[in-house]
Length: 210
Image (cartoon, rainbow, N blue to C red; front, side, top):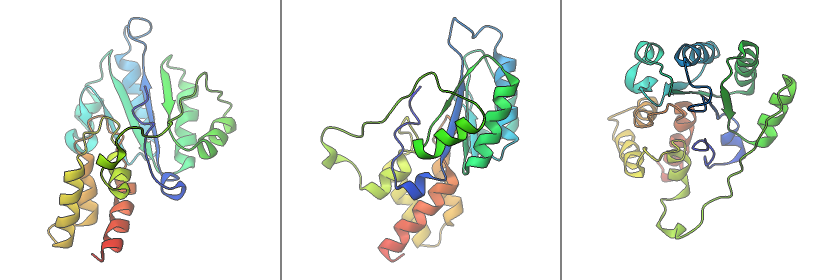
């Protein structure tokens, strides 16, 4: 599962962005796994995620806590996003101790994630590396917009929505925090990082004189 792999941005910006997901292999270890997904989500929630969700139900900003927690299924994929290595490390440590028999995927800069895994004695069995974007890149939105939209790996956060939020902020129709939460809603899985979105929106506004 690599939809959290292509988040763009500077090293500084990505250093507050650590999405994780918990998944079963369908037909292999998915039978009777719904309670395990709930347990995984409960562990994630103990460690200060700024967003979370289940791709079968939705994310926190769209559905709220209870509908997600009470609706885990055998084909769930639960997610969480952390903004610092301490919370990430403590969450992974507890997931390791729980030994739920599910796969855990962590995304982030190697320089930040690798020492975290080493600290708790975790050795990944596989690695995926984003090689960047190929093709007619001139058709893509500007990089500042992409840094926001790529936080949803299924590209459910439209560049046009980002531009609308920027316009609404400039016209005092919405705060930066409210705009970040609105941008988080279309990302069904719950891997969109609203705290990072706030910082990126502030950066765009400063550049544009807003």
